[in-house]
Image 1 (cartoon, rainbow, N blue to C red):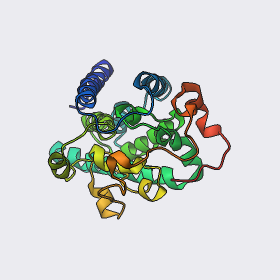
Image 2 (cartoon, rainbow, N blue to C red; image 1 turned 180 degrees about the vertical axis):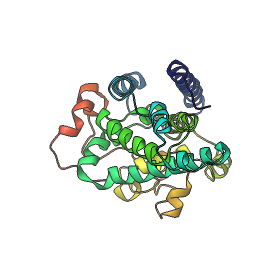
Image 3 (cartoon, rainbow, N blue to C red; image 1 turned 45 degrees about the vertical axis):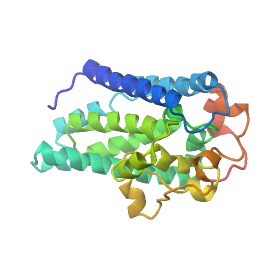
Length: 272
Protein backbone atom coordinates (compact mmCIF):
# COMPACT_ATOMS: atom_id res chain seq x y z
CA UNK A 1 0.00 0.00 0.00
CA UNK A 2 2.87 2.35 0.79
CA UNK A 3 4.60 2.06 -2.58
CA UNK A 4 2.91 4.00 -5.38
CA UNK A 5 4.64 4.23 -8.73
CA UNK A 6 4.83 7.81 -10.04
CA UNK A 7 3.56 6.80 -13.49
CA UNK A 8 0.62 4.99 -11.88
CA UNK A 9 -0.09 8.05 -9.73
CA UNK A 10 -0.12 10.45 -12.67
CA UNK A 11 -2.20 8.05 -14.78
CA UNK A 12 -4.76 7.60 -12.00
CA UNK A 13 -5.03 11.32 -11.28
CA UNK A 14 -5.35 12.20 -14.96
CA UNK A 15 -7.89 9.42 -15.48
CA UNK A 16 -10.15 10.70 -12.71
CA UNK A 17 -9.65 14.28 -13.92
CA UNK A 18 -10.72 13.34 -17.46
CA UNK A 19 -13.76 11.35 -16.32
CA UNK A 20 -14.99 14.16 -14.05
CA UNK A 21 -14.26 16.79 -16.69
CA UNK A 22 -16.26 15.00 -19.38
CA UNK A 23 -19.13 14.15 -17.03
CA UNK A 24 -19.51 17.69 -15.70
CA UNK A 25 -19.15 19.20 -19.18
CA UNK A 26 -22.08 17.11 -20.36
CA UNK A 27 -24.17 18.12 -17.34
CA UNK A 28 -23.35 21.81 -17.88
CA UNK A 29 -24.48 21.53 -21.49
CA UNK A 30 -27.62 19.49 -20.81
CA UNK A 31 -28.73 21.27 -17.63
CA UNK A 32 -26.99 24.67 -17.21
CA UNK A 33 -27.97 26.97 -14.36
CA UNK A 34 -26.60 30.36 -15.43
CA UNK A 35 -26.24 31.95 -18.86
CA UNK A 36 -22.53 32.63 -19.55
CA UNK A 37 -21.29 36.20 -20.12
CA UNK A 38 -18.30 35.16 -22.22
CA UNK A 39 -17.63 32.53 -24.84
CA UNK A 40 -16.74 29.28 -23.12
CA UNK A 41 -13.93 28.50 -25.56
CA UNK A 42 -12.11 31.75 -24.73
CA UNK A 43 -12.48 31.35 -20.98
CA UNK A 44 -11.58 27.67 -21.05
CA UNK A 45 -8.43 28.35 -23.05
CA UNK A 46 -7.24 30.78 -20.36
CA UNK A 47 -8.35 28.70 -17.38
CA UNK A 48 -6.99 25.39 -18.65
CA UNK A 49 -3.74 27.06 -19.72
CA UNK A 50 -3.37 28.27 -16.13
CA UNK A 51 -4.07 24.75 -14.86
CA UNK A 52 -1.50 23.24 -17.24
CA UNK A 53 1.08 25.79 -16.07
CA UNK A 54 0.41 24.76 -12.46
CA UNK A 55 0.78 21.07 -13.29
CA UNK A 56 4.14 21.63 -14.98
CA UNK A 57 5.49 23.81 -12.16
CA UNK A 58 4.46 21.44 -9.36
CA UNK A 59 5.62 18.31 -11.23
CA UNK A 60 9.01 19.66 -12.26
CA UNK A 61 9.95 22.13 -9.54
CA UNK A 62 8.31 20.58 -6.46
CA UNK A 63 8.32 16.79 -7.08
CA UNK A 64 8.62 16.01 -3.36
CA UNK A 65 5.16 17.39 -2.62
CA UNK A 66 2.27 14.94 -2.40
CA UNK A 67 2.73 11.19 -2.58
CA UNK A 68 6.52 11.51 -2.73
CA UNK A 69 6.41 13.61 0.42
CA UNK A 70 4.44 10.92 2.21
CA UNK A 71 6.97 8.24 1.20
CA UNK A 72 9.80 10.55 2.27
CA UNK A 73 8.17 11.06 5.71
CA UNK A 74 7.54 7.32 6.09
CA UNK A 75 11.20 6.44 5.34
CA UNK A 76 12.31 8.81 8.10
CA UNK A 77 9.57 7.99 10.56
CA UNK A 78 8.20 11.53 10.55
CA UNK A 79 4.64 12.35 11.55
CA UNK A 80 2.09 11.17 14.07
CA UNK A 81 0.89 8.13 12.11
CA UNK A 82 4.48 6.92 11.64
CA UNK A 83 5.11 7.17 15.38
CA UNK A 84 1.84 5.64 16.60
CA UNK A 85 1.00 2.28 15.08
CA UNK A 86 -2.57 2.69 13.82
CA UNK A 87 -4.64 0.82 11.27
CA UNK A 88 -5.07 2.40 7.80
CA UNK A 89 -8.82 2.06 8.39
CA UNK A 90 -8.38 4.77 11.03
CA UNK A 91 -5.52 6.86 9.67
CA UNK A 92 -6.85 7.35 6.14
CA UNK A 93 -10.22 8.89 7.17
CA UNK A 94 -8.50 10.98 9.85
CA UNK A 95 -6.01 12.32 7.32
CA UNK A 96 -8.79 13.16 4.83
CA UNK A 97 -10.60 15.14 7.53
CA UNK A 98 -7.43 16.93 8.64
CA UNK A 99 -6.53 17.64 5.02
CA UNK A 100 -9.92 19.18 4.31
CA UNK A 101 -9.83 21.23 7.51
CA UNK A 102 -6.38 22.51 6.50
CA UNK A 103 -7.68 23.51 3.06
CA UNK A 104 -10.61 25.32 4.69
CA UNK A 105 -8.31 27.26 7.06
CA UNK A 106 -5.87 27.98 4.24
CA UNK A 107 -8.73 29.32 2.13
CA UNK A 108 -9.79 31.71 4.90
CA UNK A 109 -6.18 32.81 5.29
CA UNK A 110 -5.96 33.62 1.58
CA UNK A 111 -8.96 35.90 1.98
CA UNK A 112 -7.78 37.69 5.11
CA UNK A 113 -4.06 38.38 4.45
CA UNK A 114 -3.34 41.04 1.82
CA UNK A 115 -0.37 39.44 0.00
CA UNK A 116 -2.13 36.06 -0.09
CA UNK A 117 -5.33 37.64 -1.39
CA UNK A 118 -3.33 39.10 -4.30
CA UNK A 119 -2.38 35.53 -5.19
CA UNK A 120 -5.89 34.19 -4.73
CA UNK A 121 -8.02 36.93 -6.30
CA UNK A 122 -7.33 35.63 -9.83
CA UNK A 123 -9.56 32.70 -8.91
CA UNK A 124 -12.36 35.10 -7.95
CA UNK A 125 -11.99 37.45 -10.90
CA UNK A 126 -13.70 34.95 -13.21
CA UNK A 127 -16.96 36.62 -14.25
CA UNK A 128 -18.54 33.31 -15.20
CA UNK A 129 -18.81 30.28 -12.97
CA UNK A 130 -18.29 26.78 -14.32
CA UNK A 131 -16.07 23.76 -13.77
CA UNK A 132 -13.06 25.55 -15.29
CA UNK A 133 -13.21 28.11 -12.46
CA UNK A 134 -12.32 25.21 -10.16
CA UNK A 135 -8.88 24.81 -11.75
CA UNK A 136 -8.17 28.55 -12.16
CA UNK A 137 -5.56 29.30 -9.49
CA UNK A 138 -2.41 31.37 -9.86
CA UNK A 139 0.82 29.29 -9.83
CA UNK A 140 2.15 31.26 -6.85
CA UNK A 141 -0.94 30.40 -4.81
CA UNK A 142 -0.51 26.76 -5.80
CA UNK A 143 3.09 26.86 -4.59
CA UNK A 144 2.06 28.33 -1.22
CA UNK A 145 -0.71 25.75 -0.92
CA UNK A 146 1.72 22.95 -1.82
CA UNK A 147 4.04 23.86 1.04
CA UNK A 148 1.10 23.96 3.45
CA UNK A 149 0.08 20.48 2.30
CA UNK A 150 3.66 19.26 2.65
CA UNK A 151 3.75 20.60 6.21
CA UNK A 152 0.59 18.64 7.00
CA UNK A 153 2.14 15.49 5.51
CA UNK A 154 5.30 15.84 7.61
CA UNK A 155 3.26 16.48 10.77
CA UNK A 156 0.84 13.59 10.33
CA UNK A 157 2.85 11.02 8.34
CA UNK A 158 -0.05 9.65 6.26
CA UNK A 159 0.11 6.66 3.97
CA UNK A 160 0.88 7.54 0.35
CA UNK A 161 -2.52 6.17 -0.69
CA UNK A 162 -4.22 8.62 1.71
CA UNK A 163 -2.40 11.55 0.10
CA UNK A 164 -3.31 10.29 -3.36
CA UNK A 165 -6.98 9.98 -2.39
CA UNK A 166 -6.99 13.46 -0.87
CA UNK A 167 -5.54 15.06 -4.00
CA UNK A 168 -7.93 13.23 -6.36
CA UNK A 169 -10.85 14.15 -4.11
CA UNK A 170 -9.85 17.82 -3.92
CA UNK A 171 -9.36 18.10 -7.66
CA UNK A 172 -12.67 16.40 -8.37
CA UNK A 173 -14.75 18.30 -5.84
CA UNK A 174 -13.19 21.61 -6.91
CA UNK A 175 -14.47 21.07 -10.46
CA UNK A 176 -17.80 19.73 -9.16
CA UNK A 177 -18.59 22.54 -6.72
CA UNK A 178 -17.64 25.17 -9.32
CA UNK A 179 -19.77 23.60 -12.04
CA UNK A 180 -22.62 25.43 -13.77
CA UNK A 181 -24.92 22.47 -13.28
CA UNK A 182 -28.52 23.08 -12.29
CA UNK A 183 -28.51 20.51 -9.52
CA UNK A 184 -32.11 19.62 -8.53
CA UNK A 185 -33.06 21.21 -5.21
CA UNK A 186 -33.86 17.90 -3.52
CA UNK A 187 -30.50 16.40 -4.46
CA UNK A 188 -28.69 19.59 -3.47
CA UNK A 189 -30.26 19.82 -0.02
CA UNK A 190 -29.44 16.21 0.79
CA UNK A 191 -26.00 16.11 -0.83
CA UNK A 192 -24.74 19.23 0.95
CA UNK A 193 -25.06 17.39 4.24
CA UNK A 194 -21.86 15.55 3.34
CA UNK A 195 -20.39 17.37 0.33
CA UNK A 196 -19.98 20.97 -0.82
CA UNK A 197 -22.35 21.43 -3.77
CA UNK A 198 -22.23 23.98 -6.63
CA UNK A 199 -25.14 25.90 -5.11
CA UNK A 200 -23.31 26.11 -1.80
CA UNK A 201 -19.91 27.19 -3.09
CA UNK A 202 -21.23 29.55 -5.78
CA UNK A 203 -22.24 31.95 -2.99
CA UNK A 204 -18.57 32.27 -2.07
CA UNK A 205 -17.93 33.73 -5.55
CA UNK A 206 -20.53 36.47 -5.14
CA UNK A 207 -19.45 40.01 -5.93
CA UNK A 208 -20.95 40.96 -2.55
CA UNK A 209 -18.20 40.81 0.05
CA UNK A 210 -20.58 39.64 2.79
CA UNK A 211 -21.46 36.57 0.70
CA UNK A 212 -17.90 35.98 -0.53
CA UNK A 213 -16.85 35.64 3.12
CA UNK A 214 -19.04 32.55 3.44
CA UNK A 215 -18.81 28.93 2.31
CA UNK A 216 -15.02 28.49 2.16
CA UNK A 217 -15.17 24.68 2.16
CA UNK A 218 -14.12 22.56 -0.81
CA UNK A 219 -14.87 18.94 0.10
CA UNK A 220 -16.97 18.79 3.25
CA UNK A 221 -19.53 21.40 4.40
CA UNK A 222 -19.06 20.83 8.12
CA UNK A 223 -16.26 23.35 8.69
CA UNK A 224 -18.34 26.29 7.47
CA UNK A 225 -21.17 25.27 9.77
CA UNK A 226 -18.81 24.67 12.69
CA UNK A 227 -16.99 28.00 12.35
CA UNK A 228 -20.01 30.13 11.47
CA UNK A 229 -19.20 30.85 7.81
CA UNK A 230 -22.12 28.94 6.27
CA UNK A 231 -24.77 30.63 4.15
CA UNK A 232 -27.56 28.53 2.67
CA UNK A 233 -28.63 30.71 -0.28
CA UNK A 234 -27.52 33.95 -1.99
CA UNK A 235 -29.67 37.02 -1.37
CA UNK A 236 -30.53 37.47 -5.07
CA UNK A 237 -30.81 33.79 -5.91
CA UNK A 238 -28.37 31.75 -7.97
CA UNK A 239 -29.49 33.16 -11.31
CA UNK A 240 -29.72 36.73 -10.07
CA UNK A 241 -26.45 36.93 -8.15
CA UNK A 242 -23.35 38.41 -9.76
CA UNK A 243 -20.03 36.61 -9.50
CA UNK A 244 -16.51 38.02 -9.59
CA UNK A 245 -14.86 41.07 -8.02
CA UNK A 246 -15.76 44.72 -8.56
CA UNK A 247 -12.42 45.91 -9.91
CA UNK A 248 -12.05 43.31 -12.66
CA UNK A 249 -14.96 43.40 -15.07
CA UNK A 250 -13.11 43.43 -18.40
CA UNK A 251 -11.03 41.30 -20.75
CA UNK A 252 -8.25 40.93 -18.16
CA UNK A 253 -10.38 38.26 -16.52
CA UNK A 254 -10.14 35.93 -19.53
CA UNK A 255 -6.63 36.53 -20.87
CA UNK A 256 -3.83 34.16 -19.86
CA UNK A 257 -1.00 36.69 -19.52
CA UNK A 258 -3.23 39.16 -17.67
CA UNK A 259 -4.08 36.40 -15.22
CA UNK A 260 -0.41 35.56 -14.71
CA UNK A 261 0.31 39.23 -13.97
CA UNK A 262 -2.60 39.55 -11.54
CA UNK A 263 -0.68 39.32 -8.21
CA UNK A 264 1.68 42.11 -9.30
CA UNK A 265 -1.03 44.55 -10.28
CA UNK A 266 -1.16 47.61 -8.04
CA UNK A 267 -4.72 48.71 -7.42
CA UNK A 268 -7.28 49.10 -4.69
CA UNK A 269 -9.01 45.75 -4.83
CA UNK A 270 -10.43 45.03 -1.45
CA UNK A 271 -10.03 41.83 0.47
CA UNK A 272 -12.83 39.36 0.04
